[in-house]
Length: 101
Image 1 (tube, rainbow, N blue to C red):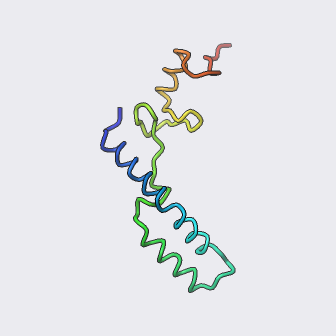
Image 2: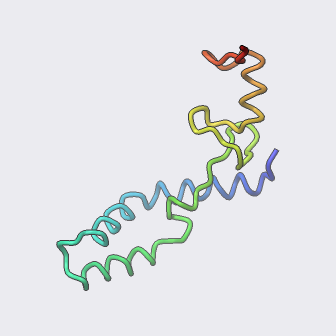
Image 3: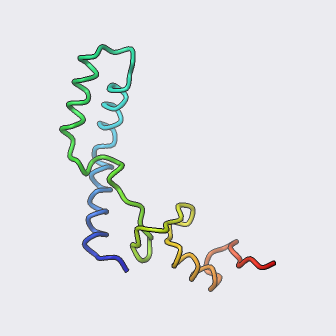
């Protein structure tokens, strides 16, 4: 089990990302738009810098839904490898079977 403070910190980051998602996407599109002038693009980048650091989507860490483990995360199941194996062996994940040959 991951530290509760780390899990809570990541949840706060998710909320900030959701809050600033529209503004961030608009400014990023302006900053990357080649048809705009250099000064307009620079202004867009400066406004992006004013958004809180944790409002950036890259700051969010993928974590296991059950344990909060940040590593060995399977996106399809939203679980870490340890819990994925445990739940699959118990038959709790539909369609997942242990392979044998």
